[in-house]
Image (cartoon, rainbow, N blue to C red; front, side, top):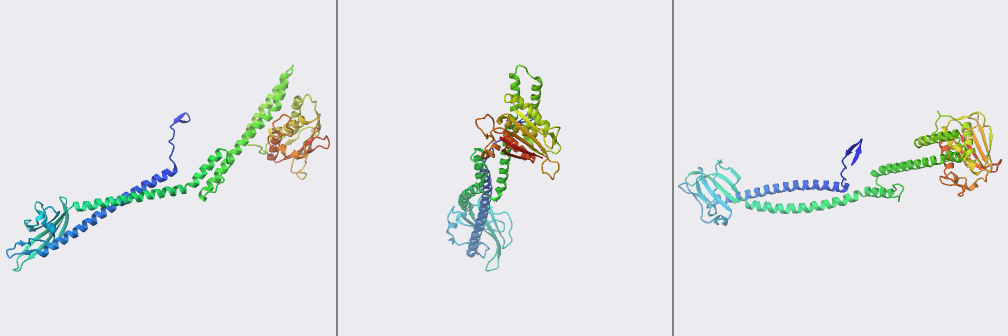
Length: 459
């Protein structure tokens, strides 16, 4: 059960597959269509069968007219033997009769004994009517008969046949039609299933590729998809890349946070081990740690964005970092040589970014130096001098870094010397920040001290 604002929502039912839904819909439509076709065909066949029976009964009427005679007394006379033998057999299902104008029976066939073919309507001479009564199909035909002496009489000739004949034919037709329609329906559904299976194959391919991405076997959707799905694949790839970038960004931010807290923690550890606790130093480092946490949280949302409305005093930050490093590397008694670092100099950067850059580079220099670090600041007076506002130069008298490893140290997790303790992310953080700020970072061997020389161009 999921909840929104404390309200429990019922768990949604797992939907069936798209193939099943399409196939089920097609089966329902085909079933309705074939049912309608079967109904129309059956009704049409029944109508045509009844029409054929009407014509057949009409022929029997004409046959009766051809052998009938009107006596001089005005009575209808019929031969004992008729052309249709069924009329002479009792219960044969074919019946015939002749009535006078007042519905009085004038003649009936032997097969008609016990069968009532009377009628309750009036027909004009030459008019006929086809109807169904008591399970029989009956045709009535009215005539005016005149004998040789000129006597005219009105007669109604009737012929009938049991409706079971039509029913049997219709039922046989129903079985045939429904059987064939069922077979055709099953065939069409099978063909529809194959077509759906083939048509939905690209969707199954994308689903398989997504499962492979989820399992870590693939990095992106790299299959060949139809044009209708290519846009979806591109958007999914963009979403996957964005999510991975966010995940990597958060991981990097956590690594940066851990790395940034390393120096304040080292200072606090030194204060704790000292016999006399310097409360001012502890308060300063706690404040610095709080600033680092806030800065890293902000950087997680907008990392390295250049903010022209924020200025930082780079000289003040350098002095604060040097003060912290003197406490961390107290045993080395590092000699910091400051050149042109008097007063104040503002750069258009976030203070947290400048702390990250200066702190990491000076901490790296303090870790590798013998006992001397040189820090120099060169200012560019106008835009004609350079596209940057200043150049910060940091040099040490340590062993330096081989030329073949200068590019590798900018990668996260790579350290110049695996024997030295560290995370291998400090220089990567510096390079990322300077690049995003629009600056430039260069490394070379120091001609003055013999160790590593950093050139930091700031905007």
